Length: 400
Figure 1 (cartoon, helix red, strand yellow):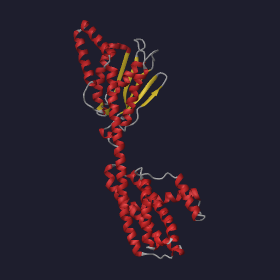
Figure 2 (tube, rainbow, N blue to C red):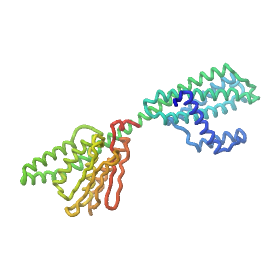
Figure 3 (tube, rainbow, N blue to C red):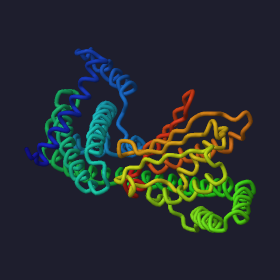
Figure 4 (cartoon, rainbow, N blue to C red):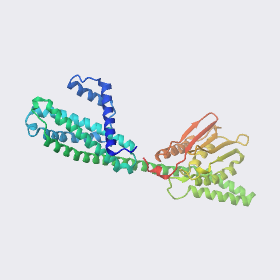
């Protein structure tokens, strides 16, 4: 069934009013017990109910505009008498301010509801249209209550003013449009500022990751071990030495690449890992056993570069391994949405755990800044398993 704008606005008004009334009834009961008690109970209710926040600055805007709006509306209701008679000015100012605040809160519930239903940037024009439509309708209801309600107070000597009502409705409609656009502008600015901040954090995390990669692999130990292995192969088998040098070149070319890619395909990462494991196997032999079980459908999904290298290095750097008790590492696809990397636990008596755990912490932070699923690390007695999310597309960097 297709719902038109009027039915959507009517539904939002009904839901928001029901939420407010039910909250009031729960906290205050069904009886008003006099005007003072009602006002105090509403204030108390506002303290216990989570007030809606569309832009984060909603109530700062309300604090600025509520007095000018109150003065303008009351001047259209009572005319010049409003500013002359203290017996009208004080109570009318308080009552109209309370009604305006209540209307603002109800409009806030409507705005939040629409934002949840239409969260994307492309939905903004449609969301603003429904917001303005709903707010104008709310203002009309408020003005009908205000212009007719003041007739109850006989001391005000007031009767319904149709001309003032029309001008007040036009004025409130214009103010609704202005305030809606203002608060939407504040919301968009805050979102842009937050995204800018997270982008900067992500850039720093990527730079730190690159530095950690260089620190952990382009260091004397790894480089000297690789060169020693190469030297031994040259003496024993020149063909094998040439193959080792070729794979070593691939590894360092990938690690020292000059681009700033935030994500690479799993296929690209696995090509690097194959070369990386070739070097490790020449160094450790059968002491290190790595199994890859990757589904073909996952190869074009994305991961941060050097993700698997960080995990593999963390495993062999913290655990002992021998030919009789090799270190097992298994990398496999799981559920089409993540990689499962498990390694057996054979802790070294002495190891520099902090540096390699820093690499894992950085990987976790990078995923969080990419607005992706969290990296999950589960330590058991005999094994450690790391769940590495696979990212479907690069739009995840910009969605919020």
